[in-house]
Image 1 (cartoon, rainbow, N blue to C red):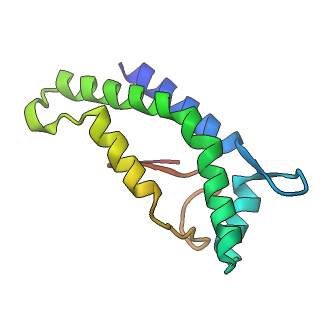
Image 2: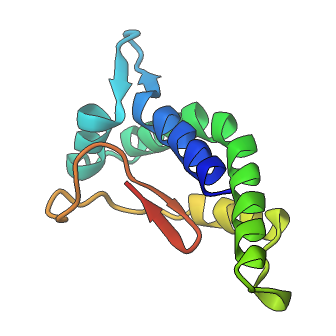
Length: 128
């Protein structure tokens, strides 16, 4: 079970860390450093929206199926560890939660004591 969770997480990290967003000139912008720099320094709403939406479009659809599988495997692991009943999340609930969170603007912080590269949020879990 833990091996499958690790495999799914690794696949999602791979997508997240290698996806790019093409600008008008066709240049591929990676999350780090290009898009992170834009999100940290730009005050241009359209540029920020382009970076955020482009990143979301480049990663979200590719990770959706993996995310659903990850929620299922984590639920199974929780049940195997004795967590039953109301603690069990559903894919629909988790997907709705992730969708709602994705519409919020979240500033990147260059001062955080976190490794550079990729960081993505899953409800109740932070993977780097």
